[in-house]
Image (cartoon, rainbow, N blue to C red; front, top):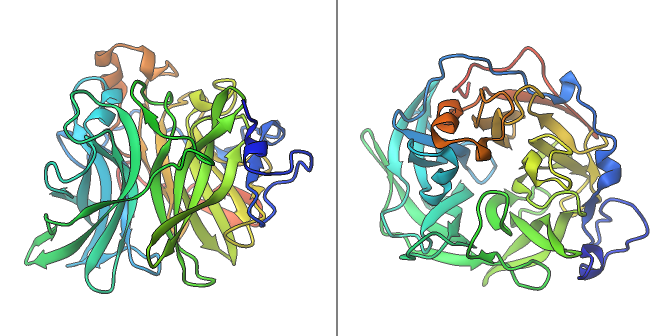
Length: 403
């Protein structure tokens, strides 16, 4: 099979990261060899605390704010507007992906208000809805970019993935905040089958499928153009490897470009890519699980990142290895789905904060459910200084809050 660098037309001999000329940054074993566990790159242990739930009877994960076009969080009727994935809190937590729906949420201080499912039943072209992003437009509509997983009406869940935009009018009337239910859901991107492998698995599960999902909206302050970052897969020897795809907005739709980054054989599932501009630098963040590395568990579940002087590079790994925040060794699956906000707060959700390191995908449903969080994790705060990133110690917020 074709090596990923040959497929993408990249020089395999230079050993450099991205060159800013259409060739992707390479995240490879030389970078991971520099990885060390330090307090600066390790999340604090959450501990056995009573965790307030965003929704009492549903799991919530993969939160993202509805942004204004300048990147700030939208506020309506004194509430911040957020979205996240939700599913009934029942059965094995890993099965929640087969029932996931995008939820609309409002936040006032530390209090969350459930605004219901973002979309009407059956509106999505998929059988369920996976992660994305959202931006509020000047005309009062909201562009929700999300992943349509599977196909509407399928007898059992498949893992076909397409990027969909639903542009709905935001209605705020008294205490009611809703997205109009009759918005059109348009497929705007799918893997091209050439640079990006098709995400069309019929069988699979978490960590076992190719990707084309998690669209992250970004407006480049340098020129005002809109982009989407997408978690994708590219060919690598006889397997596949994770990549961050880039798409540009155009008057007639979205166009795919070469990837910003490829995990050169070290990791097959990069998720939730997004960019934060800080101090004139472009910080590309993404998260991944420990079992997605080659070999498995050779690096921690965590938030990883690269930095560049412009959107297209050249990118360098933060802290030499790319690791920004890892779960503590004693609780390797404590949290997941980190998202860095423009003010450098980091939100995530409590995944398995109390399994003692047992693989949650290999334990019985009752045991996994007892150890699953299914709500917000404590908010962290980053310090960024060029190619260095660290967790700001002593400033972590309480579990379940977004201060």
